[in-house]
Length: 190
Image 1 (cartoon, rainbow, N blue to C red):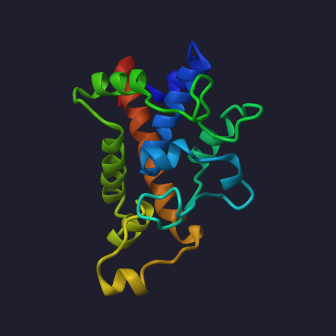
Image 2: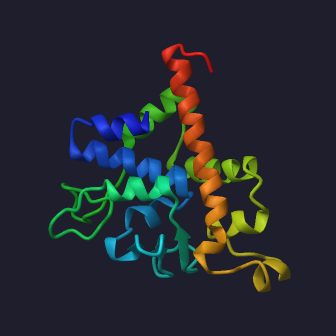
């Protein structure tokens, strides 16, 4: 549904909202961290995006690896002249997306559950578990601070390429689930 809405959106705001929700699902980032992402913090040459410590809720900077899926999502975002936000808003004083309520209402309707943007963060963690991403890598991807000695001093490689295999596995799983859902919806043999 998110991909279809991105491609067939009636307005740029609706397309942007669907892309923002897809980004949250793929990355597990916090809503403000994603909404305030600027183009200067996305590096397509080195395959990462960066959340600075002054934006991160826990004041811990994060460099997140780009998968092919995430790259395609970001590269398809329109750049708005005079606006540096990846998820720009055409009607907000802040310049970035706020509440993608219509898209989230549709996501909730399809899932049969009332879902919030933060639920997408928990879903990203659940997907990581299904993909057998270890707990230290999941913690890093969600930008959670470790409370144990191992996590603080050993399992915290800041190089995004160290987390790239986990991210690629998660995104491949999400894309596959989307294909299965589409096949079921269309009546195809799964």
